[in-house]
Image 1 (cartoon, rainbow over the protein chains, first blue to last red):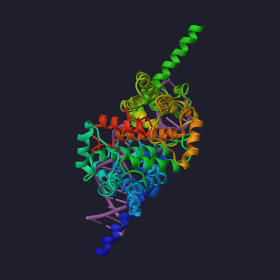
Image 2: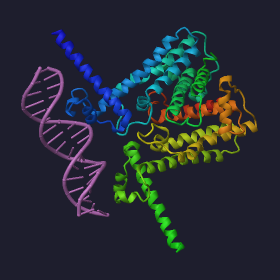
Image 3: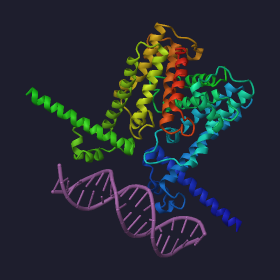
Length: 230
Length: 230
DNA sequence: GTCTATAACGAGATAGAC
DNA sequence: GTCTATCTCGTTATAGAC
């Protein structure tokens, strides 16, 4: 009985994975807006109605792809953090930034899915939130460690941002000084500005040596969150 | 004869404008990927073949929309710059940043068109480059003025980025120090990271007081390009 | 119970003949 | 410029195979 259930479950997982894989190929070729269940089914030699055993609607398939993509960058960021766990905070910050950029360059369509223009007519459900938060949590962890270790430097917070900083600390950045939380969120958004511009072609004819440029910019972001020079 | 030609030219311009307006509505409703000449024609009560007298292809219509959008942000940035021409450089920098953000919040779909995910199957032609450069040129101008006036402070450039900085100065940032050019390009990309994250929903549950947060972040960007505190 | 296939719906896009 | 025949799409109901 358990073996039968195990086999069924395994088969189900395999089909689910195949569907998502085909959907990702579609994503790359046609874009998220044109993702179609029928085309996915066709590519797999299935009939469209059969897909509904695995995903109750097209939007649920999209949601699964989005969560997978967030988990994929999140994992890349966490792996990078763990690989340099002994390095000083600025070096760890830069390593994670580079891991996120490397992931984006390796998965441009999944990057566009989660950090690019929203898909028309689709609204991401709450279930995407934990996966979406993973990358940010890695950065928060680095700053928290620095705060509890060597300390943060060069930060300040104007009076009109103090409530916001306090709320951030309470909501998602425990044990981080409010001025660091505010700087952190800004740096996080700015990092994806650098990556998005490179990926989406805004750096054409503007930045040539992109590795070096990015490493330098990531280092300045680290300074901006109080990590000092690494 | 001249009046007849003038009337014809005027009529042609009006129809062209109506086509682009309808296309922008489509952009908002369905996204750039699904922009179709037929749907635009239908909305205008025309037949699709008639549109080809104005735009030889769907891609040409897209290109026109992209150039219009770039010109629109560029104009907003230039207007903001001119409105605070007497203010010190950091204040001018922040004013332009806020103008770009205001434009983005007012034109989210056009923002997505030019700064969001690339449209699958579409490749922007060279003709978009001058319009795309306008916003950046405004920032370069502010930094150049500061350099030639009160001066820039706190900048440095590692050896491995010096060739890149020199190239930037030669290519598009004349009369700006190379270290400022590099910082400028980074700040430019980071600005759109802040705006894109706000616009595309990444700030949900993360940033509440977005005006204040943005103003502060824009000020830090100004410091990052050597403008000092305003 | 779990899955796949057939068929159909209503809506929309598209191609081509006229 | 119009009309029609033929596609696509998401989704559901149903029937049967394992």
